[in-house]
Every structure is written in structure tokens, then in C-alpha cells.
Image (cartoon, rainbow, N blue to C red; front, side):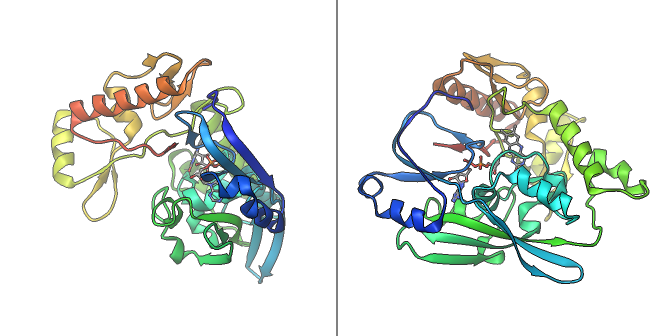
Length: 321
Ligand SMILES: Cc1cc2nc3c(=O)[nH]c(=O)nc-3n(C[C@H](O)[C@H](O)[C@H](O)COP(=O)(O)OP(=O)(O)OC[C@H]3O[C@@H](n4cnc5c(N)ncnc54)[C@H](O)[C@@H]3O)c2cc1C
């Protein structure tokens, strides 16, 4: 969010041995702690009076390969988009729709990142972790991670307990595109479609809608898209016939939070230096001088405005600390 917040200690490590040393250090043992990645989904509401841990474990190894599949293990400190570029350079299919998502490999497995019809859990085979309580290594298979929409066991039952050290992803060596999302759909008929073509299309769409993290602070989508039951949706559609919606299984309906916010008249609305990003109302942007208090006041205002107008509760997708 480009907020001016500080932590008491920051510990960065490049190997699991160095991480073990950090976990034995008095500064770690005597303070509360939290692991961060690139910080692109974090909103610190005040200074952090403890130790932040950050992985610089950076490698990509091939751990298994067959005629049509490859399994790569990537260190948690690899920048996610560098991993995507690596896959594309080697003609491995499966990560390309997640081109341009900010952050690092470790967080991809915690957050179950996703975009344009694919999610990290579609390609994650297993996740290598260290248990903060015992210091022991544990490997979680994909089903053990309990993946759901932007969710995993690491955000719930095991919140702040396991440190991801590396992630194994299985990719296809034979062409296998996912072209279900709007701007990609028309590419389905492109002859000789390439991974680079898909990546460039996605990066162009992202750049037109989302703030560039190097210039403007944001966490991407601030809220999850709410999933409501059919009766609630029927009432909503009666009042707002143009409301966009997508089936979410079991008779439930997903409604874009960005539309609810924009239709509530909040496009461009700001409190202090925090504003509803006009090109995509799902994003809260730091216009340059936002304080943590501005961001908190704005997101709470959005939640109450949307709740009063539609009777729908928005929930932050961002990690608010
Ligand atoms: C402009 C913009 C666009 C975005 N677009 C998308 C998008 O299209 N799709 C999407 O899914 N997300 C998107 N995001 C959100 C963000 O990119 C993801 O949530 C990403 O996974 C965060 O990665 P990070 O490394 O910055 O993690 P952080 O934000 O630093 O941390 C996120 C969470 O992961 C935990 N964590 C991080 N590393 C580790 C580790 N090694 N071990 C244990 N826990 C760890 C943290 O404790 C925290 O709970 C966007 C963000 C921005 C700013």
C-alpha cells in the first residue's frame, strides 16, 4: 500500500539453515513474528512491534519430468512473475494466465493466487514448509492445503504457523491453454497460439485496469467478490436489472464487488490519501500520502455503504494487520 509503517525487526534468510538460525535467535523468541513475501497483499494498520521474516530462498529446479509433464520446485523467495517467465521460456503450460500478479512464490501457495480463469492450486503439487512451533520440515500435498477461492489452510487453521520454503508445481509440456475469460476467449481460434501471446494479452489488460505497484500503492483487489444465495440474488436483480453475476455452484451466485461499489456511487471516492481506484472500484489506491488510518476509514466506509444499499457484506481479500 506504500504506507509509512515500520517493524521492530526484519530477518531475511537465503537458506533453510539460515532460517533455523533465525528461529533460534533471542530476537525471534522474545517477540511476536509474522512471515511476509513481497508485501503486495498486506495492509499494516500501524507499526509492527515484532519480527517480520522474509525468504530470499531463490532457486528453480526440475524435480520430475515425463513426456508430457514437468514438476518444478521453486524457492519461496522467487518473484512469482519470474517463475511465470521461466515456465514460458521453457514452453511449460499452466502458469501463463497468472502473468503479472505481484508477489513471491511462497505467498502463491498461501493465498491461492489466481487470475483469468486459473488458480495456483491448479498447478501446485505440494508445499514445503517449516513449522514455526517445532522447527521441523513438513510437506503438504495439494489436497492437504484445502484450497478454495483465494484461501488455504495457511490462512485459517494454520495461520502464522507454517513458513513456506518452496513450492512444487506440475506443468504441462504439451499445449493446454485456459481461454475461458473474456479477452482470452477470442484467442481460442488463433492459429499457432503461443504462451508469449497469452502473456502479452494478459499484461496489457492488467496494465489498463490495475495500478502499477511500482508507482501507486494498492493491494490489488481489496475485497472478495461476494457469493450470495439465489433468493437474495433474485431480489438484487429485481432492484438492479443490470447487475453482472456468475454461477458459483449449488444455486449460489457470485456478484462482482467492484460493480457493487461503483453502483453505490463510490467510484473515485476518497478519504485522506486513500481512494477508490476509478478504473477498477475493487481497488483501494494510495494517491501518495495515505495514512493507515485513511485506508482503514475508507474500507470500513465501503463495507457499510454496500451493506446499507444492498444488504450484502463485503469481506476484505487483503491481509489487514
Ligand atoms: C496491483 C496488484 C494486483 C494484484 N492482482 C492479483 C491477482 O490478479 N490475483 C491475485 O490472486 N492476487 C493479486 N494481487 C494480490 C497479491 O499479488 C497476492 O496476494 C500475492 O500472493 C501476494 O504476494 P506477496 O509475496 O507480496 O505476499 P504478502 O502480501 O507479503 O503476504 C501475503 C500472505 O502470504 C503470507 N506469506 C508470504 N510469504 C510466505 C511464506 N514464505 N511463508 C508463509 N507465509 C507467507 C503472509 O503472511 C500473508 O498472509 C494483486 C496485488 C496488487 C498490488
